[in-house]
Length: 62
Image (cartoon, rainbow, N blue to C red; front, side, top):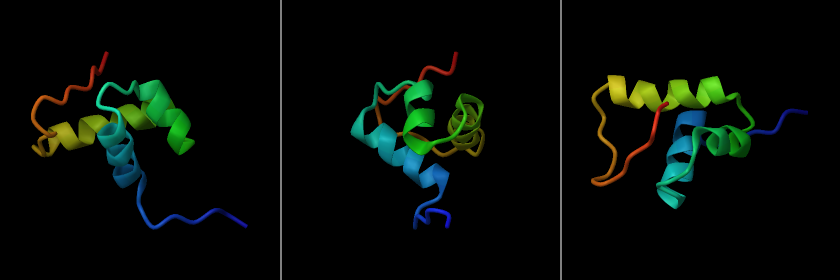
């Protein structure tokens, strides 16, 4: 049986970032069980949609 979670990967990624604003994409991917590329897509999706991170929060994308 597949594990079920109430939050989407986008929501879970936000929680990872809220816990540790300096978290690397590699660590987000490992925590969520997704690829680094998918973690990158989640972070850039937020940026492209115009949703802002909390003030002072930076996620290096490169």
